Image (tube, rainbow, N blue to C red; front, side, top):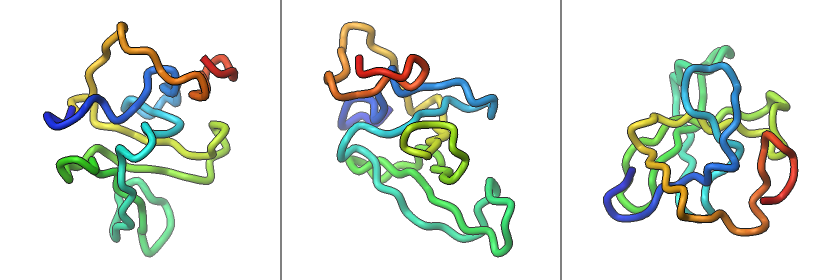
Length: 106
C-alpha cells in the first residue's frame, strides 16, 4: 500500500479469477494510472504489449491490467501485488461500487 494514500482498490471489487494474485474489477477512481508497456510477461500475443498499473500518488508498481477476458462488468482484471494492499473493514466503499462476486452495488 502506498504510504501516501489509502489502498487503491475497494474490497467489493475483488474477485476469484484463479491467477494466484489478488484480482480486482477496477481501481478506486483516480488512484491508479495505467501505463502501456512492452514485453509484458502476462500477454500471450507477440509483440507482447501490456498495461502496468501504477500508483498515482507515489508512482510505485502495483501490478498489471488485463482486458478482453469477459470476466467482470468492466472487462478488466487488475492483478495486483498483494503487498500493495491493506484491508480495513471499517472503510466502506461508495454506494456505486459494484460487488463483482454478487453483481450488485454495495
